[in-house]
Length: 139
Image (cartoon, rainbow, N blue to C red; front, side, top):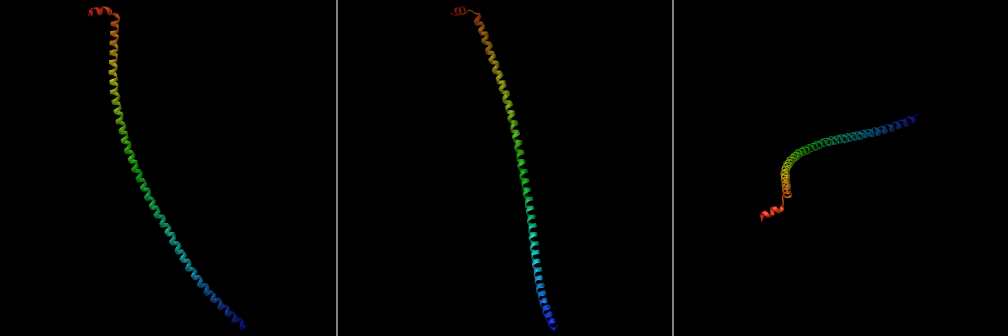
């Protein structure tokens, strides 16, 4: 038995050294895990910071686009008002021109009828008078 006790003491010593090595390895693994968790936390924090900065940048871009749209809309509305004013002026000018043209046409038409009437009177006179008699009295 004495050998058995000695063997057991050796086995216990080996087990103690292996437990010490395993404890040391577990401690190192704990440190590695802690470092990995810290690195992971830093990475996640960076991702959230990037997401937040992109959200802020996107909000700024959206505001800028809305401002540009408002500016363009204002310019379009101003252009529309100017175009409508020009159309109204053009319409007024065309109405005035049309009225003047109508008045001139009516005057011209009046003269044409007067000339036509005069020609009818002269034709009637010529047809009802003797040309030979008129020629004799003139000579």
